[in-house]
Length: 326
Image (cartoon, rainbow, N blue to C red; front, side, top):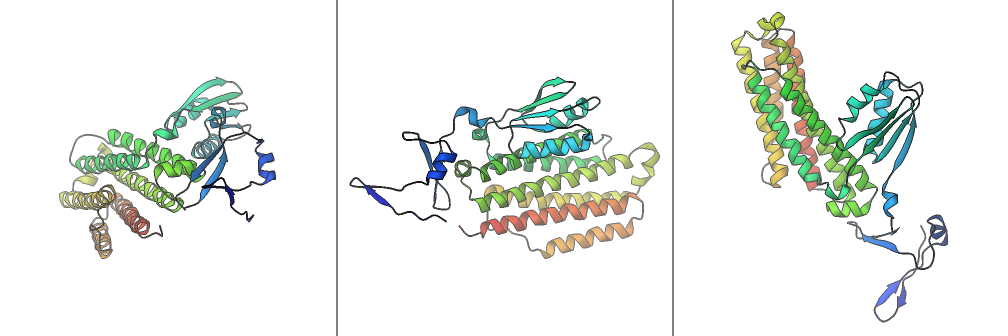
């Protein structure tokens, strides 16, 4: 670490010198403007003032010989890492429709140009308009709706198509939040705008991930219920006691989720669970599994357990964030 002394400048100001190697690397000269940002760690960050053209982060990816799954993984990583202009180069016959379908899963991403050897994707986003707490609230409210509609699905004549669409929207919001968090971790001015330290950003990223996983497991439950209602499986949900027990388990899970989400949303530190309650819930799920030996029951029980585990992890992360060093 390079140490430098404060130099008095005038009657009330102080200054320090900056390393010549840093000036050279950033192509700075006398008279250039620097951005000085106070971070949440009580330190100063000095950066060259960015030009408007610097905000466009481009990346070219060679997709020659890559499978569609490999391409999607590359796209996901570049989206999360904040790139705004992504060009896929190489033969793409038979892959364009697949890529287009997955690009639509990314908020603000659009395919702008397609040729036989090139797909250009632009992400139209403005970090200044992103609010992490609003995204979490959005995820929470959509997931509450997924819980409610999945419970109603047990007795209704509808299918899970609307629930599945809501699940897709939760995952899109999760990806947008993760993109914003990664950007903020690499840009202290953005972290300052969020009014979150690096440690708090880390905890927020876990909370968002666990909320997204909770929605995903409820979605899996809804798909099983939907399948069980098909003609060739219709006998699977004839047991009225099993249906009632499943409904109560889902309502209980929704209640736990709602309390955890409301605790975060309202910043109410007085509302906390006793972890033994989760243990009691797991025992209820095991009881449901033992009493219902149909093929669908063990899988439902497993998803319910994972669902509860993610809610539990969400709460634990919230407690950890509240007690983190400031």
